[in-house]
Length: 197
Image (tube, rainbow, N blue to C red; front, top):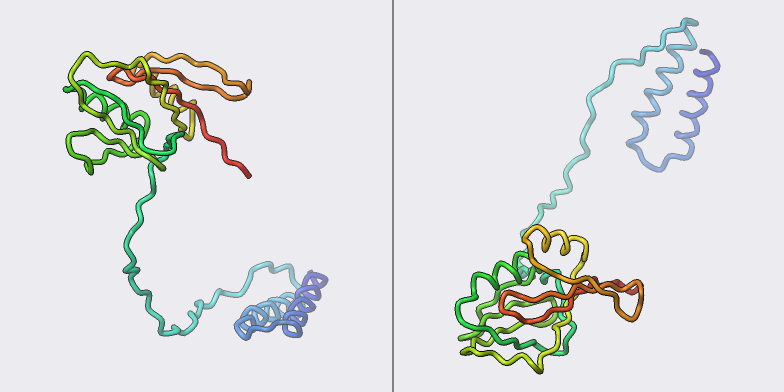
């Protein structure tokens, strides 16, 4: 025990010598008191002196101010691999099905900034459905490429909702795509985006 008291006293004197902050003096005083208490009595009493209440530092007088800048909402966590908005055909009466698919499953954001058209916004562009009278001609329409954060989560959501899809590989064996149709019959090619570092 005397060896411990000597070590504590050495630590206290080192703190006094090298400390740059006055508020450490209270901690140093406690160490000195503990070392003298255990060294002077010559006993094996391991109890520390009663803790004194902690004194708070005086307030600087600064008060936080509310941030009055306009809030910028985060973009949807889905991307369109396109250079502009993508227009797809749709028959009338599919609004609820499209909302459930594009908003709940693919995490697009519904937008009402267009008249007589259903719009679902991604991070960069939007999918715009032009409501047309059937029959709809899709012969010249290729699958719309979409990127999502997690292909595994999307696959689980599709299985849970019993939406059929086909998994396929791209030119790179490590790249996987999901091919499926939206509620109106338009083909989609969905992959998982990769961050380049």
